[in-house]
Amino acid sequence: MAGATRARGLAPGRGQSRWTGEFSASTSGEDWASSYSEVFAEEVRHLLPLPDNPPPLLERVAVRVGKTPYARFDRNDYSIPHTHVRRVLTVLADPEQVRIVDGAQLLACHRRSYDKGAQIEQADHLQALATQKRAARQHRGTDRLAQAAPASQELLRRAAARGTPLGGVTTTLLQLLERHGAAALQAAIREALERDVPHPNAVRLALDRHREQRGTPPPVAVVLPASLQARDRPVQPHALETYDRLKDAADD
Image (cartoon, rainbow, N blue to C red; front, side, top):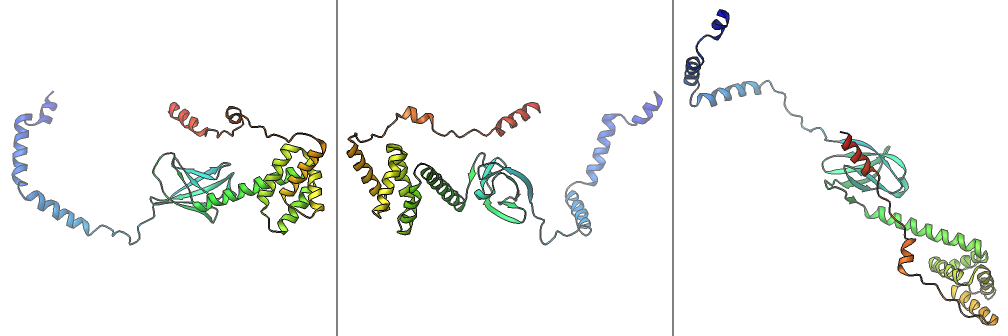
């Protein structure tokens, strides 16, 4: 008990007021500012200077790209060339822009977005994707015609030699295939080729003439109601990563 009394020293109230008075008397007024200024001036001489080129604030992240040509970074989707889907790419991001690279190849450079769920796209990426899809549709149509009416390949070759757009020719032949069938279309194409008129109109005239000779009514296109057409409409699946993030947040 005696040791504790000696450790306390002066009574709390009287000792505190004495220390405060002495300290405030020695450091009152402008002494505070002058003392801090002198200490800072002394410390500045020992500080290292800042570099002329500040270090870059670069974030490097590996991202896995699915079947759609977008790389997800920081809750946003950045477009990439459609030729680089289904692989792991590298995102190099700084406060101003986002670069997407594949090894040493620069694929895309976007202005960084701080939104949530935004799609940042480049016009050349979208144009290349649209061109590729258009070519794929025409290729599928050509394959279908080749299987149903082999003579269509010769008609397409002659039409291309004469400068006729093959997209329109393929679309029209597919419509005639749906209405008249494969056998009738094959016969009509052969007749058009024998007449050296490689054009869908010549094929249509041959089909109508054969139908009149058989005495059958003209085919009528089947128009389905909108409710039935909606059943075959492609559905965009929802990204399942959202549920993974919700599960991780619940676990935390």
